[in-house]
Amino acid sequence: MDSRASLAPKPEFSAHDEVEFLSFVLGEEHYALDIMSVKEIRGYEPVTKIANAPSFIKGVLNLRGDIVPIVDLRMKFNVGTVTYDEFTIVIMLNVCDRIVGIVVDAVSDVIKLSSEAILPAPEFGAAFDSRYLKGLATVDEKMVILVNIQALISSDDLGLMETNSLSEQE
Image 1 (cartoon, rainbow, N blue to C red):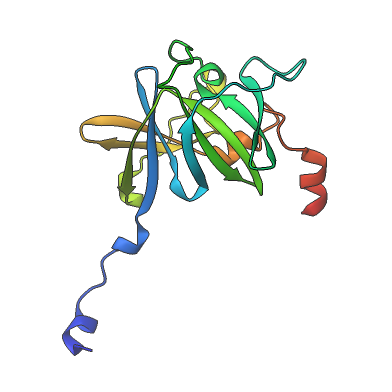
Image 2: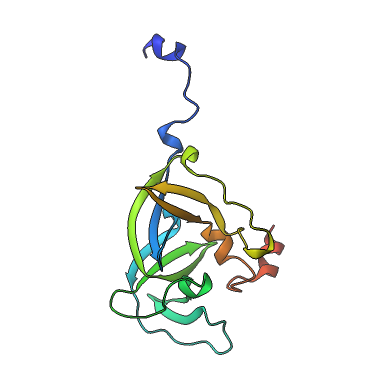
């Protein structure tokens, strides 16, 4: 090991602190989520509707023996026109030991962001619930909204996880 390297001041941030995100589009906005939660990306296919489910929960489908709820993020976030065609994408996620699919308009790219590049989500008060946002980042001159997908999927809003069983495990 080069002794000069140990004398140099350590950078506050290293490449190891970079996190990869999968970026996607909802309406006109660009979003991203932690790529470690992504199981697979597939085209939209018809789902089995569930009675009395909120409108943004499209239904369930059988994914190789797992019954997977499908959430339309366009409807949940109230962005974009909701159409289902051959270009509609479903991102399968593994969140809290459960597989959940989210419907998006398009998948863009895998982006690497340093913690310095991620700005905190602004507080909007009661007008907007920012608890599902990790922050914001500028990528190729576009603002990207970083979604805290674990918080969203496990939230009471979606009702996909049993909060009683989660709190009992803690």
